[in-house]
Amino acid sequence: MRPLFRYSEPYAPQGNIDAKASDRAIGRPQLDMWDVVLRETLQNSWDARLSDESQVAYSADAYWPTESQILALRRDVFAQVYPRSQLKEFLDANIEEQPLLVITDAGTKGLGGPTRADLVTDEDTDFVDMVRNVGRAADKRVGGGTYGFGKGVLWQASSCSTVIIYSKATFKGRPVSRFIAMGHTDSYAEGRKRYTGRHWWGRPDETTMVEPVEGQEADRLALALGMKRLEGHQTGTSLMILGPLASDNTETLSDIVQRMGSAALWWAWPHMVDETIDFSFTDEGSSVAVPRPYEDPVLQHFAAAYQRASANPGSGGEFPWRSDFLRMQRPKLDLGSLVWRYLPPEELLGETHVPITSHIALMRRPRLIVKYLPVRDAPKGQATVGVFVASDDADEFFASAEPVAHDDWAPTKMGLAKGARNPVKYALERIRDSFGRAALSVSPEEDAEERRQGLVHLSTALGDMVVNDGDAASVERGPSGGGGTPRKLRVRVVGTPSLELDGHEHIAVFQLEALIPASTRLPVGVTADPYVVSEAGRETDTDLEQPEVRDWRYEGQEAVRMRRGLRINKHGSVTMSVHVAIPADSAVGLGVRIFETGPAA
Image (cartoon, rainbow, N blue to C red; front, side, top):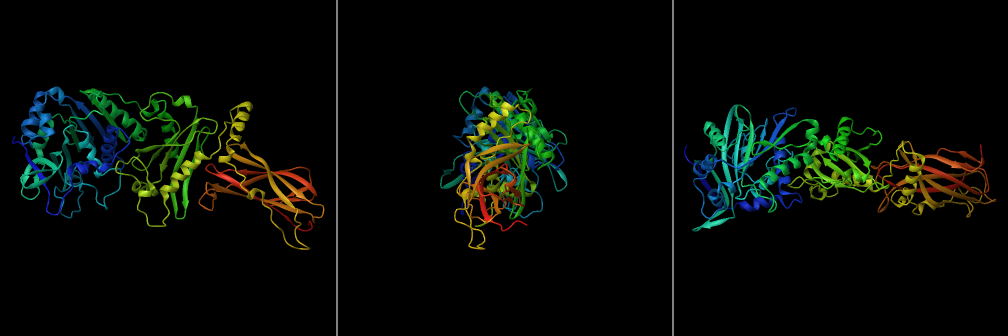
């Protein structure tokens, strides 16, 4: 077997991108490096699935190479190594200092398409997206990854910034195997020529300078290095990271593969629930056990919320579950399903891959967790656990809000036209408001004392849920008639609003006091106008669910119910209460009005 040819990329006269700069394009994710590696490779694997119904097999195999495998690396793949490089140091090291990590997706398309990046084609461009190009074309299908800037983390994860790529795909209707290696270094100069730091090992070519090894030779090279997951007719891609880096000085190769297995559980558990990805992790050939989400004491609650959100989006939750389906009215757009429950905080204690107190797992179409969004604890002190599953109709908006690492939704980075409504911003605000202001769901199974204590606790937090901001004590003149409404005719909210539970509906109870002088022409009318309140004051956004008056209660029999309030046939001081249903994601205020109605019919 001929040793592979090395090609080092010179800067073109019009310029190129620096290799290390392209690796750093992923930014500085707050996650552990192996979490980012897992997320980036898994998202690309999911994008490459053969059909929407097919299952993907994803594996990570960590092992120490045999002497024959090290010989194949030195003699067949990297016979031509640039001097003073970290790759040379890796190859020259003792065998116990040369670990390997192979990440494979099978049952996927593999890296098909042309190997040239400069020609227009109707074929998929997966090979050139991974091997040649940096970034992703604007018209590339927006999925989870599709080999954009995020692939740079693979070279960051290698102690010698080198990755071997082996893929089996179909191109122009025929199966094709491809094998090529890529290394990244700092840019450098040799003589009077400058180089970008990007290096390939393959077969020399007059046009592209270097091409992948193909066919049986590619298969033999991969097998010689222990890349065994794509034997037979299986299509897919294997990525070998040379010298996987420890996140700290104490992390071993076993720790790395354990970390990846844990990352798969915490960032991809929806696929375990749906059985759409089959995961496998091995350490020196021994299987590394990864629990299922329903076996984890914390994730079991997220998984249960996800199943409810997926089975019937927007349906009312059965205790202890609560749910809401978020929509925009202008423009009309379904945003997604929010399902959650409250738990005693002690149920979330213990060591977890991601620290969980009160969090909502955010996800969209690739069904990978974007992030665990922290939200407020429930007013009674319970923890909140749930999911938000973005609607497929809004997937493009949420995808455009993700940074390179796909680990957040950043609505300010979407590039929307000035003045355009932002669905992602609106959804995140609604989610946060749901837990910033939502009232506590008191279990109908709790005894009377527990219910009473829960409501007493809530009364200390009513400033976040029920407000009396001035409109609640407003006085309005009625029709002038014979001299107009007397100046002393008035109504006001008294005391602090309280909270009641009617089934699973939370009711704010406003106490009102009306003063009706003897000179007032009876009857008089009292009406109430509840409204949503934001931090800025009265909320005029009609997309928000609105509070509604559910009931009026009053002293004595001198009042008659009207459509929106009461008709009172009594002079003097009259007390009454108005009962308002609070939307789960809102604080409410109340405007009240008193006026003469004329003689009773």
